[in-house]
Image 1: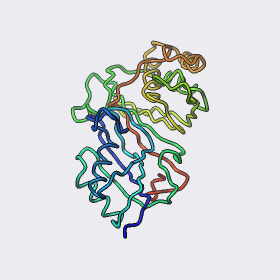
Image 2: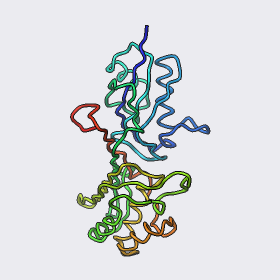
Image 3: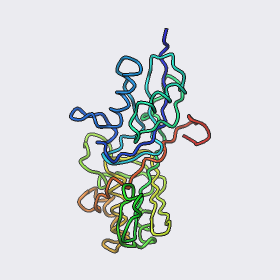
Image 4: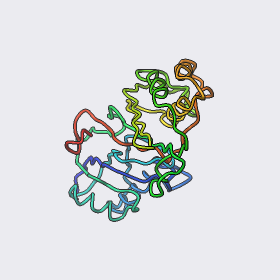
Length: 258
């Protein structure tokens, strides 16, 4: 008789052609939807998958963590092989691990790390063009870092999100914002306990405007204090954004800290 197991999945995906992570009623073209379809084929019944973060349309993942309760006799390696066999090539399962019954990938995540890539040169390398936003200008690194400093800590990020449900708190804690140059490219690494809808992309857009001299570093703090999305910068395109890592209280998949 099959035993119900709580299985954690470590997932990467190219989000270019998907309508985001979360299953939706008007489309089956989501990452969660594709996973659930294959798991239903594997087990013979619907299996709900919970992800650590609900990435938006066009956003990618290098280290999405999800969990699903399965009635199966299959071993971890067998589940991993089955999923990779039947999932599209732009969704990959890196690891499968049985976890305690009460583990929930979204509710128990302590930190999430997002990375955003920007090309400051006039042309993005051909084979990176789907994953890097081509700005075509070189922003002032120190001005962006100064502006980013105002966002570190626990704040109400209403001014840095889109169409928020006002019944839910917009208070989040950002632990770090690193802006790392790699030749003509910039890597924004943003670590926090949680993120609102479009929050990372709006932060990046605001910092880019700061670096280009279109706003002052101090204006970042004013947007934060004013709670007004209209005073923040543009929403950076989805294609440059990656969910890089989900961090929990204990390691799940080994020595990678996830």
